[in-house]
Image 1 (cartoon, protein in one colour):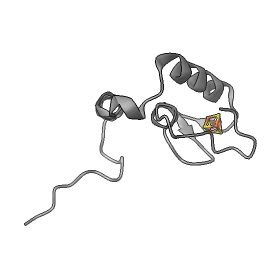
Image 2 (cartoon, helix red, strand yellow):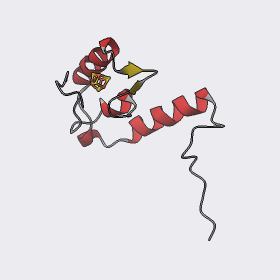
Image 3 (tube, rainbow, N blue to C red):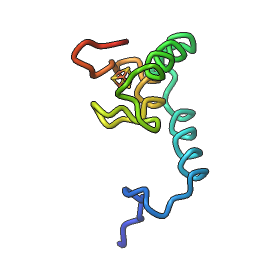
Length: 83
Ligand code: SF4
């Protein structure tokens, strides 16, 4: 059986396709794994002011912060965590 290409590399993926994939991932994340909306907003606000943020990606861990911040069990990977 031929494996289905999941596009592990972002090359060839349009920005809008990429955005909708991230949003779809967030929407399908089980509710019990997500933080509440206020916590999510607070976390993203701290990421937004952080010098390690680059184009939506945390340069310390390589995660998309909008995904990392949404997960209840995630934490900021900085030596001195910001959230
Ligand atoms: S997860 Fe932490 S280190 Fe990474 S961008 Fe957000 S605040 Fe900065």
